[in-house]
Image 1 (tube, rainbow, N blue to C red):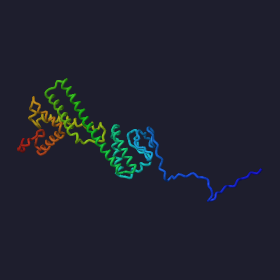
Image 2: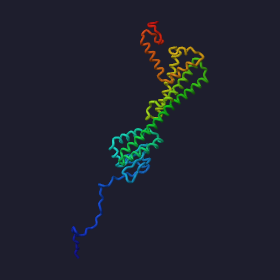
Image 3: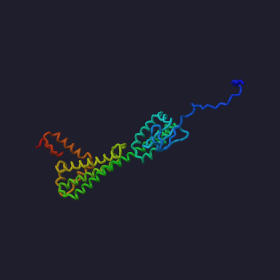
Image 4: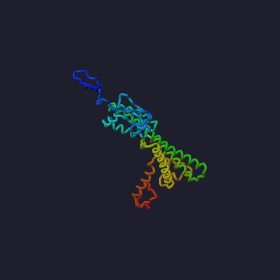
Length: 301
């Protein structure tokens, strides 16, 4: 029995052909959207802690990692570089975001995520405006925080000085000179803190610094007030300035000068500068004595 081979079937152009499955048009397909879940890691190893925008009709995901940074995964990230203003706003917010506390990030990150979404959807003008509004809010929040830190540092040092001086006064037997020094330091610290409180809106501290850094600046302001108050007391006692106040034994009028020295940072430097100016104009003048302004005598000894 011989094997019979069936001839190959050929189909004419006009004849019946077997059904063929339609081939997908790869040129029209969008890139595969990343599938991320809370707690999972993205392509960069960042753990996703919060999802803000994950629409099934978009090619991007806007989320927040465990460090509080806003991230974008997907092909939409490439579209953010098309607008210069939007790119600058994104970079500025990223710089401010590192200075925010977790509580502040919960307020401002959703706003910034909305700006990301608008930008990725193609509306660069509106997205940049949302980012600018968010940045202004962040700046105001950081400014309030830095002012609180500045005042807190000054208040802490002032309170510590009051407690220590109070303990010194209660448990030590101060001489009249020691009492005057004690009162000078007390009034100088109070004047320094009063100056801080009144000029809080005009302080020049870096709002992007940490809380402790701005608090240290406030501490330094009270230390300067104490130094100025001590120098002012010595100037009065030496009768270099306000000599009539140094002659008072029972009155407390001399305390006005330490308080003023603590309140006005430039008080003691201005006095010392004025002394230097007067002495430099007269080489024969006694360097420990200030000539009164109304004195017309020249070359007096």
